Length: 157
Image 1: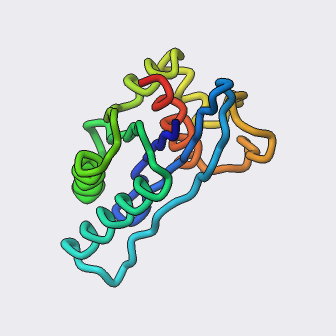
Image 2: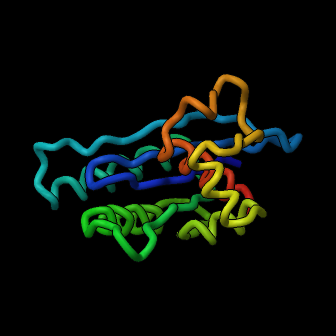
């Protein structure tokens, strides 16, 4: 089973992580990357580009479950909220079987950790041990960490 976690970082960048859970319950990290929305696109074009790119990824990897880390109510840009809405619509239009949106508390709950631990993991105050050795937790960015944690939370849907 393949899952994906999304973290919209700004009005022009979306981080994601794709994980595969194998029959023996081991976890294989297939990809963690970002989508950059071209600056030359106007908003309708940017949202269409986002939708099409997300659908391509979901179909290419045959994703079954997904979680989107959505903005906390204070301080989120309107553009980020638009992109998060387009992600939700794309997922609803795809063969994904289960999906969830959530703020920090929801994702922490799915991970079976305390909300404060989620923040400490994202801020690199503690290291997340459930990742392969080739991913250096201390060297990746906050949005990448959030995408990885969000993908891991999708395993528990």
